[in-house]
Image 1 (cartoon, each protein chain N blue to C red):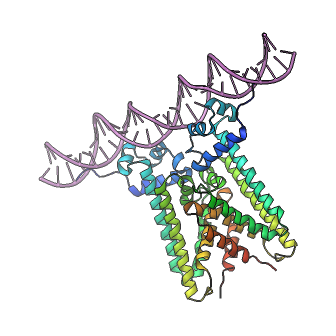
Image 2: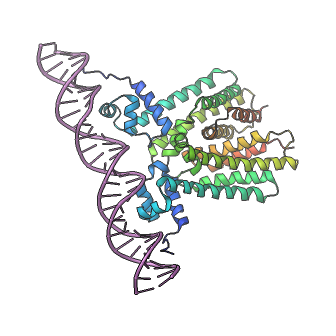
Image 3: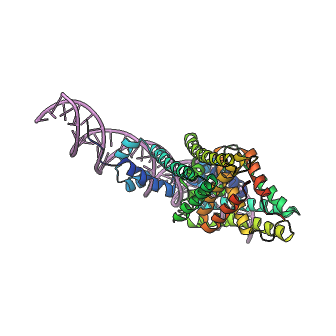
Length: 195
Length: 195
DNA sequence: TCCCTTCTATAAGGGATACTCAATAATTGG
DNA sequence: CCAATTATTGAGTATCCCTTATAGAAGGGA
């Protein structure tokens, strides 16, 4: 019915994600976004309304991909504890693949914008909660299968694993040291109250 | 020899810290700093050279205070494992005192500036390393006293406790939930390889 | 008291910022 | 092929940014 857009929305989101991921929301200028996406300001604004609008769409894209990844890893294995172990080692592998130490877009966004932007904090919170819920579900499954002791506090165990994941994302901004994080993960999973 | 400054440097640093802590480096404007410190731009610049200079001095002040706190708690108790437990519960208490969810200035700075500013990343890394070293020293002490098993991997245990601390600082930006973090800490310390 | 230095107050410079808009181009339905 | 609709373009705007220049005030040493 009218002229179709020349750009591919997903590609633009990818490029914008790289920029926001590397330098954060505030330090990424619209000029930067224009450079990396190759869109002119007008096109950017007609497609995404504002810098913040683009950022939120980037955030949602990132979250959806990560959640999907977690779900797949946790769902696949028939052994839920092994699945959790696998998932956590993958988190560390992601971090060591990340040569420039940009960490996790969700965690970065939480610390940069959480105090000032309620909507964005809600979105990130939601992401963190979802990951926690999937891990919790796997723990409960392990309990039902008798791998985990019946009196194990799965809420606390899930929270413990989550703090470890987000903590590693902070620590690796400092100095990526995958070997020691793998050891931490193995230690934690070896001390789970198995039966 | 000349007119003395009317302002108190420490008070100015305190006020600036509040601002930077709440909104981060980039989102805190010099106008904001002028407002909270009550200094005019000229005085600010003659005292701190630049916004970044002021920020670095704020960072150092924050780090020194925190390190001092950690050292005191860890040194006081004769029981090193209890001291660690105490320290970690205090971290959580700090988080729940923080009504506006600004988290930890060091962690926030790491995620905001680590990829772009090498000097600042080094400063924050140094802080994280120092805390880790103090915890590690307490673990070794516990080992020498026979509280911790001789074959315990104190490096890994120290790193595990660190990831937990920084992870909790992320999680509590989302929703402060001290009770569950206290449980996590107790779980972790109860699963240390004591003898 | 006078001088020198360093403070404070005010304003403004120079550049980057997020964003807009009017003109032009391209596509589709009739 | 025309009309309608939407995308692209890139110059442009107003605002905010960090920083500095300037003038006057104030304290200490001689």
